Image 1: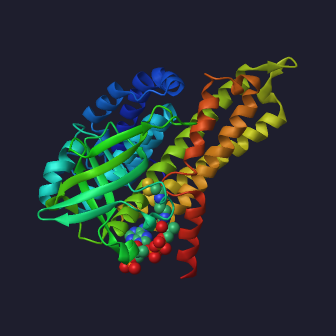
Image 2 (image 1 turned 60 degrees about the vertical axis):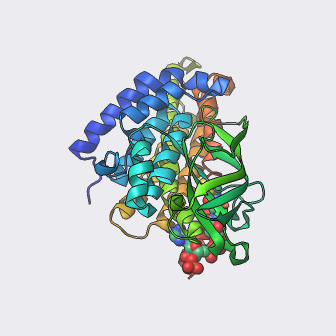
Length: 379
Ligand code: COS
């Protein structure tokens, strides 16, 4: 077992860090405040390969393992969780899923441009009446000749309105419940694909989430991903990988909050000395660093199990459950360390605190992670 990064990992992470510091950090507060999707930065991220990190080189990606991917997502998240949300969805939910379940033709046509940064993708499971209970989805896909015709509504879809390719999950046979869900690769410029309201959110305000409507949207049958009725398993498998990305994001947010708190504790003087000289602050810093390191280890271990080809569902859920809780606890303490300054709009820790909350909700709430973990333990 080796806890240190390899030379290759070090060199990639240095490049990602440089990019994050030079290109993302300077705009992070503004994109949050104004709720702007940073098109230029996301395009640059695509051009340097970070949108297809875990995809083999022959399909347009960087061919990295998941451990390295998680480290890179952490690095991006330290600068902006809004940016890393877009990157994580594209890598884990979209590219990984196409790589795992797509045919060679589908990979050449859709995965290559998604992994090499030409396009970004989105992943649409959630509906007004189907969030945690994905099996209750109402979107239907009816076979008509060589096509499936989709009707329905999706909500909270990350990258909607920005993505060229969307993975859409729809009911091809309602009677069969979860076994009646099928997955489709959809060109979002098709007739009948309508992007609705763009959400105004508490955090990750520089990422874009929107509603999508399907109005007799015809999808060629050859764009079915996997087999008919396999959609739920495909979605769950995608989200397993996605949860590693969100854990890494949570670790990055916590690390950024910790870094700012350590700096502030040395600079801020009260009663004639830095506040870091007081045990009240020292204990907070000690707990923050311990929790953040533990969350990182769990995240990297889940990624390592995936890389070894082992079942990693429970590890990904444990990592996300723990890391998202750590992100909340550490950012709450970071605001406390900063006092009134940390409560003001425009302070980094105020943004980190709001960004952290989503990691307990998306790609499966903390309550869902407990269901997944306990089921594995008790089966
Ligand atoms: N990977 C692959 N297959 C999986 C899987 C996984 N992680 N989890 C479940 N499956 C398979 C099961 O093996 C089962 O197939 P078989 O009957 O052939 O064995 C099938 O999927 C149905 O599984 P299950 O009966 O466990 O489904 P449930 O409806 O009971 O699942 C939970 C319940 C809550 C665990 C599930 O619905 C879930 O994770 N929901 C959260 C969804 C989510 O994260 N939503 C966020 C928005 S999407 S980004």
